[in-house]
Amino acid sequence: MKKTILIVAMLVMALGLSAQEEKKISIPSGYRAFIEEENSMQLVSKEHSLIGVGTTHGFYMNEHCFVGLGFTLMGNEDDFLMPIYAAVRYNFGYKSNVTPVLSLRAGSYLSESTGLYADLGFGVRFASKHHFAISVMLTGTFFEPTEHYSYSLGDYVNVNHSGAGIRIGMEL
Image (cartoon, rainbow, N blue to C red; front, side, top):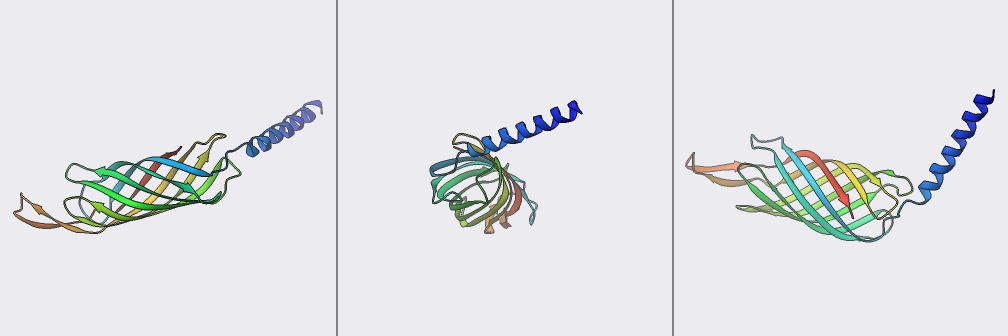
């Protein structure tokens, strides 16, 4: 009986401490910067997968909605791309350490040619007590297909870098 009371008391104390910690979580506001690493596996072509690193800078309009601008440097063995975009992120909560997040990017990319760029991501944001968070997202990325000259084939070939991938980032 004493063991049961002791266990219940410890559980109540642990719940009380975790409830206090939740109140200490930093509420997103003001200027924020994101630094993200992303991988994109090509789904519609035989091109090599892309890997990249990027940054987005902007402001939280309220506790949930972030709006900003950014760019990413992406490449593989054959190509180099630089998407430049406007970004919107929506956090579905901010009162706990772990919250779902939705991200949308739209813009253009620069390479041997240019084209439209769009990216939709859904994932999880892990917040800290300070102005810092880590997010992990599943992404779907669209690159407008373009033509590149292939020296080995001696002709123009269609290239499509659209794909799905994972993005891991820090919010500072």
